[in-house]
Length: 127
Image (cartoon, rainbow, N blue to C red):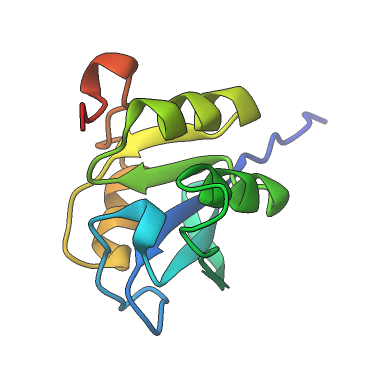
């Protein structure tokens, strides 16, 4: 009998309210209304949760990094990201991917198909 290996990844997509698979993606993860967190198990969409973003005041752009780490996120999909939060995500073990698609569902399917490249420091915003 062979043991089946199950792969599960929790991805977070910055979203506009109300969040969910049909929600529009937000272009700025630090100031998005919420994150749609999607559990992908063996290439299939599983549980979907909505997590309201932390205020962008205290902690600045590091507040969402810590919030997502607390919720066991493995990857985030962004349109752009600065060097400081990118390093923060790397430090807490959250992979950062460049996003495509206008809505969360399109983005999730692109992630599942492996079409979202990992963002390195050379791809970070310089502002």
